[in-house]
Image (cartoon, rainbow, N blue to C red):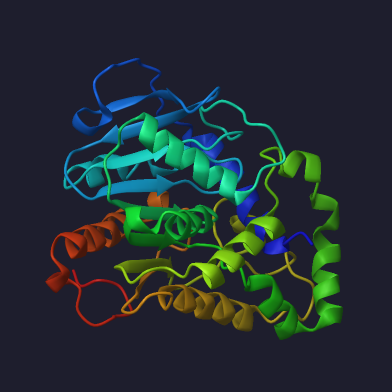
Length: 323
């Protein structure tokens, strides 16, 4: 069953990604990726994917963009800042707004993960990696860490969609109110338009759920970044806010309980590993690298420093970092 919350998020991502555009530069360069800044496409076996790498040093930060439509432009405001302290790469998944070649459909989360693995190998991008995932990009980041555990040493999840949201929300509101919720948005959903990438939310979430059971995340520094004060109107939601009230929900929808559920699920993501942290953004917009780049860079820096020096990773904390 299609997830209504995902529709809200993906509509926002589609609009904002189109406004941001991408920073792709299709330049050919034979210099190994490990030693030079570049933005170009690499062949992964009959198809090519766009990859943008900057900076130097280890570990390498890999940025997974949001949505089914989005692209590497989601990280325009933070890429250069991360490159000041380590190697960082962002890429365009197949069948998105970016410059990567199309891939046959249907596709699975495993297909996306294997594409990225082949891309990093083709571009000679050195590990180990810190995986950063925005929105559904967090699901791909987690799948990558479960599939290639020896390569991943840290993770940052930015407003990641929890795979358990629908089941928990159904339980929270009951079958009648959930049916009214789905009916409210039924006319806004066109599968052929919404899933041109060949990925379906329910199937992707099932993959993540299975991976969580079969190959849990290894202990590693993990930061989850989510929203502190998610308040907005329905119209504002479509312009970039993640939480909304009013006509986007049927009457009697428990707004405060829904917000609490989202926060609880973000806490559960942090608990996937011992000592996982939650940082809170006050900017009230789902696309955190655009709305709160300082906090996003700080979260990534914390994980980079913890990988380099484990003594910098003390007991778990919750809240915004000290100024």
